[in-house]
Image 1: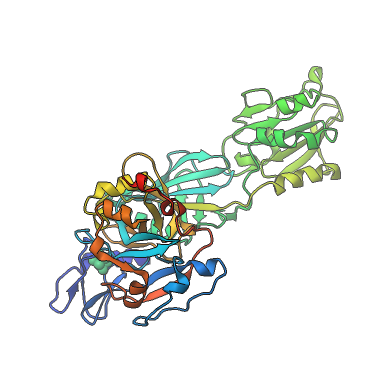
Image 2: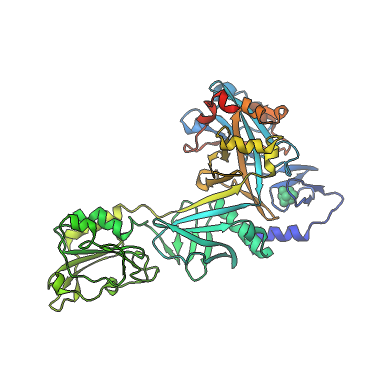
Length: 512
Ligand code: SF4
């Protein structure tokens, strides 16, 4: 049983009120917590009769990222007068901020700071996302499983294989149906896998009818125990297009083996414009356009994402009337350049493997050099269009409209997000841009993610914001908030822009 599953057990068996326990109301579970203990999610505890957020509030220091002086860690209660030095360079994230679930009261922190003469307000809360999922991109040619195949963690269904992209296999994990619509073990396993993926930890996934893959954000995938090193340079046809010139005059035929589009240089448009001669080759597969073949094999873990280990298995009889002749030379190579072989036709027009010639080594190396490192990418997708908006404004739809008008800049732990067009606030964020261990969970089950909304102060007032709750950065650093946790300063990632220029320079007319 995973650590998180044990926590779920605690929650389900221990929800009995005891006189000396106090109640946490930061999520619908409403744990009663004894003194010195933490609740079911470990994020809140009872310290001396007060509910305390157990992790520190994280404040990102953007001066560190640009080479400026780093303000030392600010201990609780210590006065901080760095506003002059750090003006606009500190960002209060929602990591450790706590939640004001169910948002009948303002968000835990509503922060004001002047940046380049503009008064910005950032509303900070840890959102509870019942509607959330994870999109995983795995850079590999290898066949992980058929589209729509179930993806499992700890034996439970947590998502499915979705449409593959160029050089990558894609998984769609989580979502409300797996979190809440199935059995309790399914919901727990889904929450557990998503939490670990979002916190950049490795998760082992098993695909029905396919491979076992270990996914870790920003790291190469491990497929059936084998570390994937390279992403393909392109499909077989694209590889022919890119390298046909390099092969001209060095070899009579080139076949780039690919599960999707196998390329044959003598027939391909790129070969034709270079005046490549016919070779009488026959590919066993479905011809699409000249020199491009589909389905030369079944998808698998072999050459170019096929099942084959012997590339000759995709060739038919050579035709002497169309150019086949003894001694004709042929290079066969995969889309990553990891597999390659050299052949010459014998007197019976059968290809015979020969030692790989030096003259072709450079072109194979070039394919390898042009392959990018294979990585796993994990995007958290969450719907922030629900009740948490009420912690920002008294009129929640105003926040949605403001986000879509780009008046409000949305971040997750300081990382920029992509907002889907259309209704609601459906956001996607690359978890590698979010500080470590920023995500949490509650056993309902749901994921907890930091979220910050930044806009000009005048825009905030116009959309019905909680003006009386606005506090300065210095006040928050010095005194913290209702959950009594300490503050910690952390260098901001150089890839996460702050301040948001669009909000700084939004004209007054756009605010109406
Ligand atoms: S699960 Fe966590 S947030 Fe929810 S009530 Fe319990 S301690 Fe509070």
